[in-house]
Length: 184
Length: 107
Image 1 (cartoon, each protein chain N blue to C red):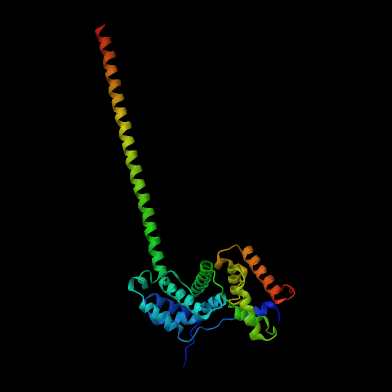
Image 2 (cartoon, each protein chain N blue to C red):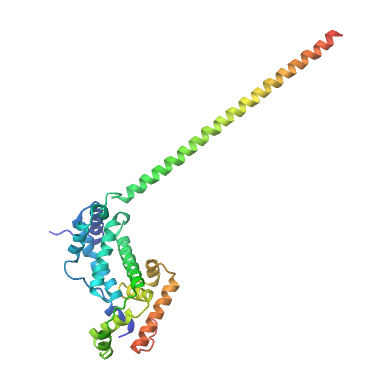
């Protein structure tokens, strides 16, 4: 017979055990959120090794700050906020160019209707956006968050977030040569 | 496909390379003890909040009790001063009466 444990209770137990110093419980927390944290960094930098590095740093920071976190929602919010801010800070510090010229040349010629190529093209176009627009777009479309939730993570007024999102979409449409769509 | 749907597809979550959690745990193990910051402080933040609230309440109540004692002492001192003033005034009146009586008998 298998007992059905609600996920929230299970998570809360893992969090409490991790706070008490149980490394296996902390590893459980990492496994639960690694895809979210890693993907935020990967979509931000379009660089897998850099994303791995950022994600590892974020989880190390989580380990050091476990005591201040109480619920799953709090952990989730904290991880999104720290990852996003770390990505923005890194790009502001280094101003690195994430897309190689070879990749860009290849992408210009691809068929937009083929999904893998379109995905790749979009990811590369996202890299060309200013860092705040990039963060807002990633949180909006990877994490499916509303501007009201995104503004708490990036620490900006909701109207500024909406404006960044609007400008980002406008810029992407222009580069993809698409006409504006009706707002749903 | 709309741009928004394309973005959702392009930006869907992806797992890191296998063994990510192990690599994180390895990093934690490799950290010096002082940097590791292993949780040894509030394991249950609710208890710490309750304790902090109790200390604050005790401080407020203690402060109020001290204030009451100080006020009471100040009142006692004022009462003593009034009684002393009345005693002095009474003595002066008595002395004046004696003087007046003395003048009367001298005549």
